[in-house]
Amino acid sequence: MNFFTAPSVMADFLLYTLIRLTIAIAPSGKVHFLVNRPENPQSLLFIIDLYIFIVYIFELEKQIWPVIMNKNYELIREILSKRILVLDGAMGTMIQRYKLTEEDYRGNKFKHHASDLKGNNDILVLTKPEIIKEIHGKYLEAGADIIETDTFNGTSISQSDYNTQAYVYEINYNAAKIAREAADEYTLINPDKPRFVAGAVGPTSKTLTLSPDVNDPGFRAITFDELVLSYRESVKGLIEGGADVLLVETIFDTLNCKAAIFAIQDYCDDNNINIPVMISGTIVDLSGRTLSGQTTEAFWISISHTKNLLSVGLNCALGAKQMRPFLEELSNMSSCYISVYPNAGLPNELGGYD
Image (cartoon, rainbow, N blue to C red):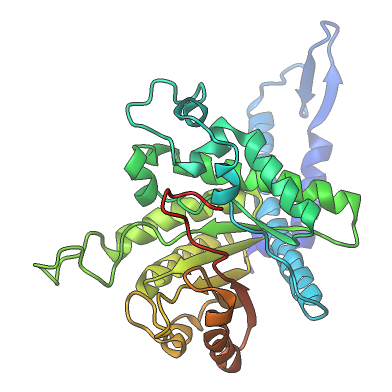
């Protein structure tokens, strides 16, 4: 038997250790831990007891965390069995309304950063968190059940365009924390309508299936293992920041998606947790194929093995009317819930939205 997985044994040992680690206040007003010999609070026995206590606190946390994650999973599935859950809208177009400058994107943290940061919306969770939280609040006020974190480009691969790849964990952790705070505030207002956080995992700017060099079709700009490591760092930040679900979205290359799935499962296995996964692909035209050439059916078959797969769906590229037949096809063959968030429109000739 694994001692760490026997809760009753561990609870008894924690109680025993707490009894031994009694606290007393000395005449000086300082707090001392008294273990067996009050005259020697720094005894070896004290150090051993304290060490064991800390180790078991961490082990207890590892057992509690999966229970919490599983409860959220079951709660989401229970609600989905009764009604449709509403996802929030686009983050980028909302940010555009604030007409932020380069200085806004930099803030104090990146005041002397060597590269331009305007357009790096993910960095705003560090430099303008109040704006991101305000946007979350607007979607929650409108009735969204699930809000996405501001991390569509939150991988080291995408952040390398701005030379900010060293901040990837911080970006994802803070993005999830901001969304978590906003969601919890609205859940507190109306406990009968719990709100959830989806950690957004974007497709990155690289592709595993296609060569970026037309003269060298065998060339790849990145390897599968490199992509897994990049995704894993993002996943770690999102989960530890408080995401209820991970949303792998806008998939144009299914092999990229498989790297994300592998990274998620690898992190969950290492930390003994479960987290629901939503997967959303993108078809590029009315042929119904992804950029890497897969049909809707082939896409489903490729990702259907995903552990804790909550939903599969389509987003971006096409409008609701054009997307409907492909979504219907996906619904007929899939064994999980279906998600959809179609393209609401395209930028005008100046790159803005009317």
